[in-house]
Length: 66
Image (cartoon, rainbow, N blue to C red):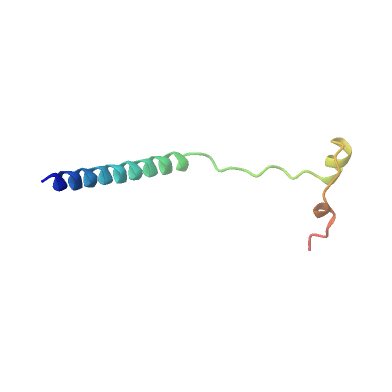
């Protein structure tokens, strides 16, 4: 009899965990769908980085893009 109670309580806890996970997933997708689309930041030119900000550029910026 004791084994049945333990198994039943494990089953109840597993189902409650599954319901909580599904509810959280549902709420997160509802909240994410209402936002405005994100926009990418404007690219910063190498001139602005080196001259105006005073930093040096990594070698990747000087490679040809094609």
